[in-house]
Image (cartoon, rainbow, N blue to C red; front, side, top):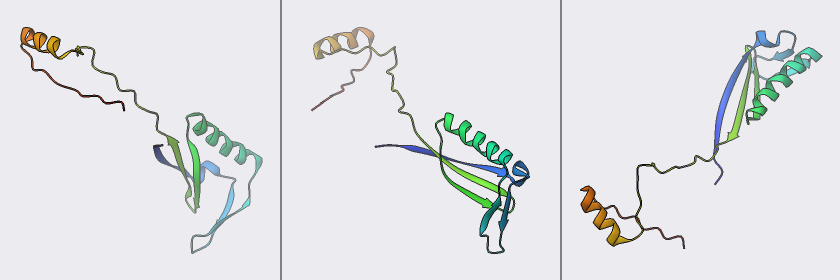
Length: 113
């Protein structure tokens, strides 16, 4: 099963000083004019986040700025057994060793099938 993590970033209207978008009183916003400098700035944000593995899934524009919604696949965590655990595959050997070390025997039944 794929697992994802999500992040929301906020970008104030001051970040995009020349980007002109109009928001109605009901909150509907439209882009009226976007200068090249502003699209380059937006591309830079997208590329930086993309290089970190984030995928833009939505942008929400408002009168105070913009919110960007990101997701990325969670990397599988590698589980490493502690190096101080010593495994025995034979029951008799495990019992003898447990007695010598005065430790309990812990059984782990693994059935790959």
